[in-house]
Amino acid sequence: MSSFDEYAALLRHLSAQQRAGEQDTAAKTERHRHLGATVDYLHRRLLAQGQRLDHLGRTIGVDPGTAVPPPGFPPGSGPPMPPGAAPVSGVPVSGSPDSGPSGGTSGAGSVSGMPEPPAAAGHQPVSGGPSGSPGTVGIGGAAAAPGRSGVGAYPQSGQTDRALPVAVSATEAGVPAQRAGTVDPATELELARRWADEADRYAQQAEMLAQRPALLPGWSPMARAVAVYLGFSGVAVVLMLVMVLASGVGAVGFGTLIAWMCAGLPAAALIGAWLVLGKWGRPASGAATPPRYPLLGFLLCFLAVPLAYCGYLLLFRALR
Image (cartoon, rainbow, N blue to C red; front, top):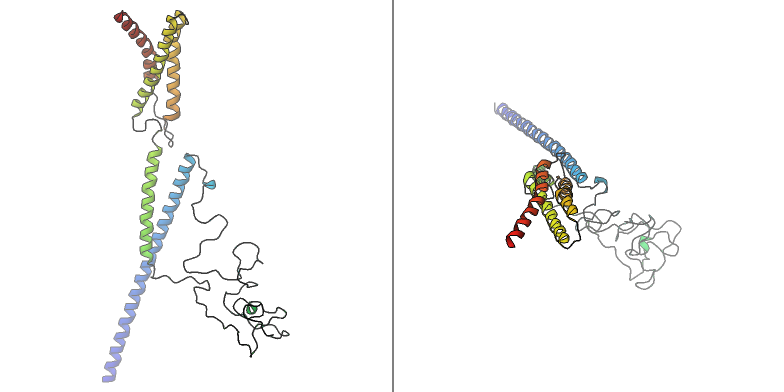
């Protein structure tokens, strides 16, 4: 009876473990599905942001294909090595494939500090010279150049100043150091989502700035038009006063003064203000052009100069 009870308890234990494993597998599957959906969502957001940036770049006259890369390493060079990693000897970083690294090694595929296999058959090992001579066997010496005539891969048994192989750590051999902690995909995706939100916020600010004209951006279209028309009318009034003074000394005739005062100067002011509003009163992005109020400009320009002349005459008579 005890054996049957133990068998039943073991069966229940195995059944509970199986259900726990199935639940764990289902939870992992659901988590992976959720992570995959999040990655797809972020991918679509990044594509949309790239299109918005390309549109803004074309709006301000920057070709996306000729954009300046971010500062980092110079073009043509490889990515920076991870911290704590050392380059592998014999693997050229730049230049021709036959260029070997500094340090006395010859050939590719050898790691600095690691001995090579013995020399090929037919080459007898010879005694090395004093320490530091070409015959001394050491790291980067004869062991790094097998098959060279007159140089053995290993010293003779009676040599006293031979160099022993040095143990090379994984970091010195070019293997990047292991990261301190395990990266959580959910945390990384949440950080990516926050950065995407920040990028959207800055893109909206850039679009709002691009929809504002360069001339008096904080003003309404009507106030901007009135200010521009009045400014050009003021310039026309100043020119009219100069012509009045020139007419007083006989440099300009009275008929010429009247023609410029009633038609020439107001028309020049109206055309100049119209062109300025069309050039600098238009936003950088967006096809909608703000109204330029031509009727208001006509009234301001063609009434300002004659009224200013009439005011000048009244002031001159009052002062006399």
